[in-house]
Image (cartoon, rainbow, N blue to C red; front, top):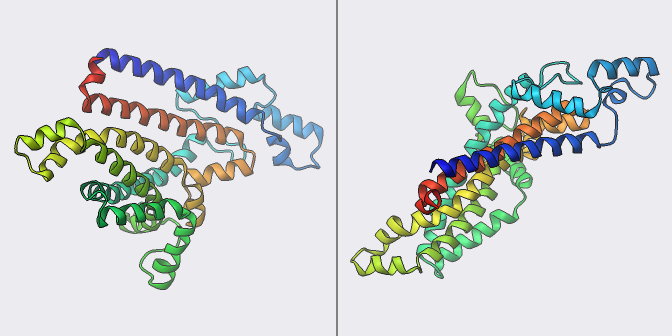
Length: 313
């Protein structure tokens, strides 16, 4: 297990190093100058040069890259070009919205997908299975922003059960969760549909294996065989999907955050790109890449715990 963990840690560090270089290079070659954007097209050359020097844009790219990476290792993400405030503080404020929203949506997706996937596999080829497959196909096909607007129309405007947008803060947790409920449902529907289809497929395949027939021959009922043996083996591919979905939900709610006016990470990235705030774009994207790689690392550890062949191989 220690050797397996060491290999995965080395892979994590190498992936982060490569990702940081790629992110910096891609952002740097993007057209436009942040200083010119901030001062406007009529800015004097002397003023433009002074601002570029203040922002560190006149330094060599290699020096800027090393300074950026070194700052992130110490928790210093730099200073926003636009707001003149530390990026770390901006990210922390937005993270307290995007992270609970991602966890909320992922929880709803799992609660939707587990019973649907198990039901479809248990009644393969029959009416419950057809219903699960039809609804999951519908969930994948519906754009989440359109579903989000439909939720606002029904639950916020017509029935007035949940707020239509905005975030009141965590001083009142009940109101905060109410504000995140509709966005979480909008994000959870397509992810739950995908997860249900994957679980149904893997569980159906698992139920045809020899060890399932052996368990049935020993006297276990169909339900006992499904829960004790089939589900555990079918969950291994599902863990991969869960890891990818969490990473997507953390960063992929840009449109949903725009629909519900949530000041999360997705909206921060959108605003930073439109304002050419490069240091914010680089830092937030790097943070999201770190979240993706970390989740994949934890998923690999979950694999090793679920399948002893991996940690002993």
